[in-house]
Amino acid sequence: MKVELLSYLSTEGLLEALKELGLTCPPELLIPHTSFTFSIEGISRACSHQLIRHRTASFTQQSQRFVKVKRLREHVVLPESIRKRALQPYMEFIDKAGEVYVKLMELGVPGEDARFVLPNATTTNLLVTMNGLALKHFFGLRCCLRAQWEIRTLADMMLLKIRSADPMLPPLGPYCYQLGHCPEGRLSCGRMMEVRERYDKLT
Ligand SMILES: Cc1cc2nc3c(=O)[nH]c(=O)nc-3n(C[C@H](O)[C@H](O)[C@H](O)COP(=O)(O)OP(=O)(O)OC[C@H]3O[C@@H](n4cnc5c(N)ncnc54)[C@H](O)[C@@H]3O)c2cc1C
Image: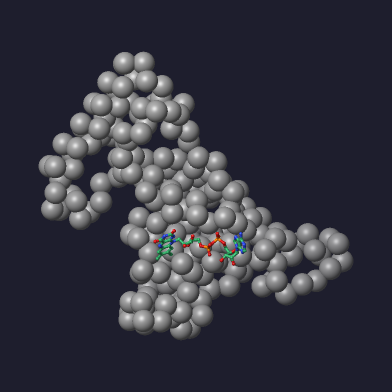
């Protein structure tokens, strides 16, 4: 997985613009005007499906209709649990899926239909733009230990990128870190102190 912050409009930049206009504003109220565009490479389709549920963001995703997967084995995410416990059946399945995918296209099936045999593990690339408020909510949900590991890793990488680009943003991280309490109720991981310490260090 690779994450780059391609462009951004930071709180500091906005304060400068306001100054030019003869305006002032508390920095925390500028968060909806901030904007961050990321390039994200090599996440699984399982992860990108979770990512695109965030409706307040804008997305451009690599087309599986037009971009053909050459060697599937080189374009899949390998979860740690599978690497440790079930690498062989997993890779056998990936190779078989890749073989059938190529076979379908050799038989004249168009890419848009051949992709039906590609697994959730298949990697994808996206361009994502979110404002600071949308990101705050995204981190609140997806840095949480209840979130799935891959999107949590992605959220952490995005957080690190914007932390250095815009240090004036409010504390960012899972909701327990932002709010000072866990909003998950009985589903809470019960590890709030440990999580908060981690985000104190991370950010
Ligand atoms: C741990 C976890 C488990 C999950 N499990 C599932 C699951 O099993 N099944 C499943 O389907 N999804 C699941 N999701 C996805 C979840 O339901 C949300 O779709 C996803 O987290 C996006 O959150 P959101 O809608 O708050 O964010 P966004 O879509 O980014 O929206 C942000 C906020 O904008 C407002 N908003 C956005 N669109 C509208 C609208 N049309 N009308 C009114 N207000 C709007 C809401 O206040 C919303 O909270 C899971 C998410 C997490 C974090």
